[in-house]
Image (cartoon, rainbow, N blue to C red; front, side, top):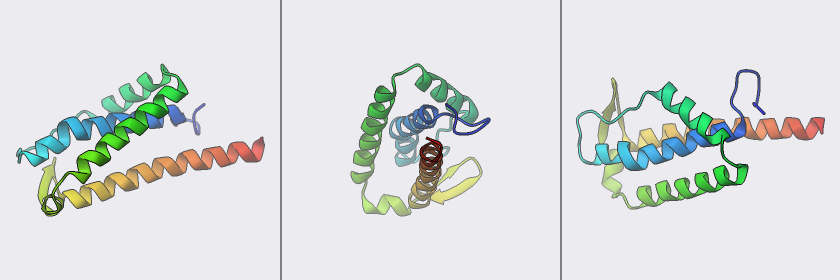
Length: 128
């Protein structure tokens, strides 16, 4: 069930978070760490739509399990980085930012989605 009209369902939100965790681990962070001039960027709307669609074809528990695994994998990757790396600047498109700022933006993004899910669950409880 979508969180609101025109919005994704919880599994679709989690599915898109899984995609981005995998993308960070496998493409974006290695590209950044290798000093590649242009950091790899997918077609965002296409990638999000595909990830959301794929998540709807899986069982709820499978999506949750996959999210936990990928998030743990991402955290392990991040924990293995040297402290100096977080202050290095890189570019995504026309944006220039430090890795620390980039991760802050990702956390804000994820917290936004977690809040959407929490609000939705609270609304269900009130109606239920």
